[in-house]
Image 1: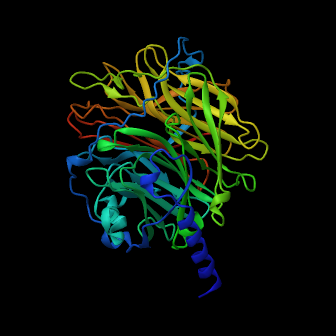
Image 2: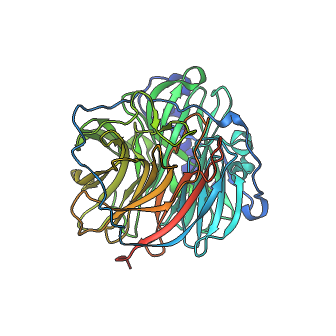
Image 3: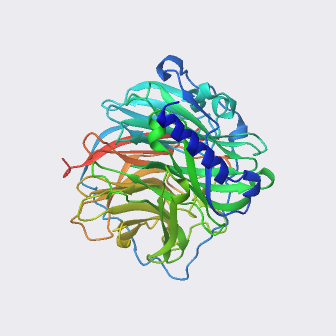
Length: 520
């Protein structure tokens, strides 16, 4: 036995000692270490992926509520309409992504690599050429990637997918959930490509979450020492009891190399919900040894701030600290009591705002003299929904809000946003826009560093909807994503859902690439 194999055997033995059976963890908080159920390598996707067939209605689950409802008696002090003039951007590509005949909501997100764009929805993925937007592969069912694993990961599509491009390694990260109909067998299925080609082979992993522990709304992030993930853990009959958020670190080094891997997790109480991990943008790494930063909503005037340092050589030395409160301008959730209150033109249904959580992604950059985090969530920006956004600085020392604002319109609801920053500090956000006279559409706003703090320019319409959603469980989102092209660190890619034709679950998606004119 080689020295490395011996060390891994010793580590596995120690993990088995400190791990607690899931049945005993129903209310247990703190550290837990979970060993993969299985890992292997996939066949090249280009040789096996086929167009997707329509999927079963069993995947269309009602939204699981954490019970968080934040309200304030104060009006939003930072709500303001964007300037009205278009942000100084140039649209490079604007085309239709994947569409219709799948479960709701579509869970739309994408990431961009050196030559390709991967869009993933509930429950399919597609690969596009980055230069022209030409379809290279798919749409194909996500479980195609995991077929070699067998079991639930290799045969089912549980939704809540995420795709990221690991810029440090030039690899793709893909995940989705897998579970049985009674939620008594739950898994996080994770794939890491073996090259920068998204149509090639993947190291695929099955991480079990155990009986009656449903890891809802997973969100992932790339960090130098780990792939960090967060989950809302539900249990009880049909997974209806909320136990609290769980933060996990997956062994990035071993997964990049296709080796057996563990995940180090910290379970939080039910008062902590919907954590969001920080995802690295740009070529400059965080300070050496910096932990991953995580945020969640706390109350009407605060965010929760956490740090997570994973130690895979000695998991018991891993540290999860927080919450520390970051004061913000007061806000209230929109639809706090009804969940679904965003209007559409008739015969559309009221749409879910999902305003009880921060929206994907929490984007991090290191400029050397400062480290910004940008993030957004949906709030009551007066009578209508607005997109509240923050730039938080100095997370490695003492996090503080550098600027914040709520993008609103007097007649249109804005919600379900995603935000990112390019390498010179320009910020862009994309989101859904709807009213009783406006079919759900996709809008963009942006700002340059010289703009008045807390303000945005725009909006620009990425695509105007020409239909409404009917009888689809009021689901919308559950998220969208704005990503930065690693090739130039300027081009921003946004994807979001909309409807071309009114109907039931026949959504489509848009992919828009643009850049600020000042970025080079």
